[in-house]
Image 1 (tube, rainbow, N blue to C red):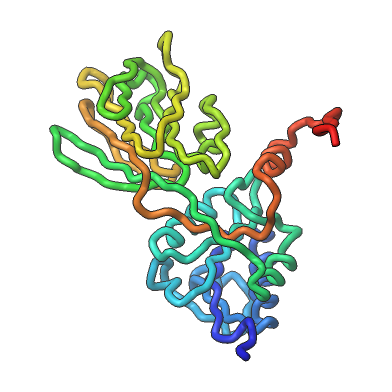
Image 2 (cartoon, helix red, strand yellow):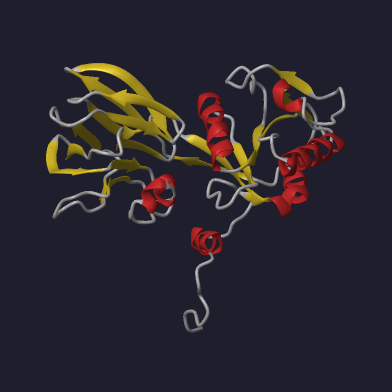
Length: 302
């Protein structure tokens, strides 16, 4: 019978510019190697770590870099986790996040759980779930000029602080509302606790299949957050007479939007796969991440 760690490789992605991340990465690498699991890292990040020569190094992250890997373990805050999600989506390799930042809703574990993470990976005691993504395209003069994707959100925002961005929102080919403001966030349930939450949108449980459209500081009588079918197509049209806008995808990739541009957002064809160690409900995660007061709760009667 094969041992559970035979011929297994894990890719480790870490924000090694921080002391805590360096120590955490070293701990994970050595722990996995003791379990007989090969570890692959970016050469740039490995240079900051006191690691054995047996670690595999690659020059840049991408589908080829994680080929043959069982997992992508990401150590860091939300930005590092979203960086890991790019490779997870492109390769289909599940991502397991360890939060070294503040909130970290995408993370499955915290810094104090590093030994548990290594143990669970070594014994394959984890499950994999798929998270919805967004496919995004930009049209100008009817032509598609840019395509992108997002795990959390695609946001259409004003490019200048001095001027409002005038937009018309649309759902399934029908106009909903025109308003001026700071922009519009189109989000997945995963992204409902990120930018959409800060803009006043609802918290949507990850198991719910839906798309969200949340106006940002809109000057309008009706500019409420909308929750639509996952099969819907959301659109934001930048009005011709307004200043240029900008499209941000997950706060990482950006493209300028000239006046008259149209941004269309639909359910992504390719999900991101996340490795889960815990069976705790999203409700418990929400309470813990936001430190919500629950004193006085008595629960349902027996």
